[in-house]
Image (tube, rainbow, N blue to C red; front, side, top):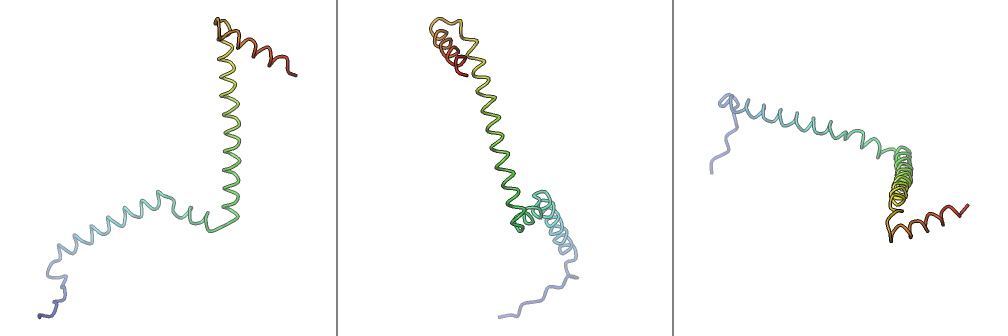
Length: 106
């Protein structure tokens, strides 16, 4: 069995340069992706429990407020649409009764 020859960069300078260029471009693309993903910010947020609690609290508050406002808008639009159908023969009587019931409540 022959001993392994050591690789001499002087023998193949072009191939080595090409490989180094390829690796540098690959490292640049990985660096760009990590910056784009804001990996540092994610690690900082999860390393500090107070920051994480505050962030989660604000997210929950925002979701709750958003759901409440969204429900209000959708029900308001639905009520407005129902008032447009009061003049229909069969559905209109039911909607008119519903409107009278709502107006009678204080």
